[in-house]
Image (cartoon, rainbow, N blue to C red; front, side, top):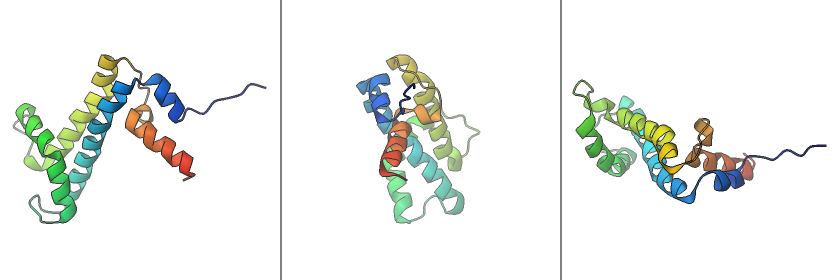
Length: 125
């Protein structure tokens, strides 16, 4: 009988270099917080005093400042968080694996998402 191995957190350590994990984690958090920021401003004002929106705006402010430099003029300010999330996704999915030398075969194989999915399976959720 052939034993099969589960591609969990041990696989992430062997296939992704530690520098790749350390670089990808902040970009992944920024990508997901930009997505959450966009989803919140769909139903709220951009300058709302809602606490979660202020926190997301504060976390993402540096990346928004950098993205504004390369953003086309036809993209309105309400779409900036979604545009930032797209740029971060492209960076995480295509550029980081190419530069750091690890493979990403799908969305679930990205270091942050693989870490979250392995934690979910370890907790039995």
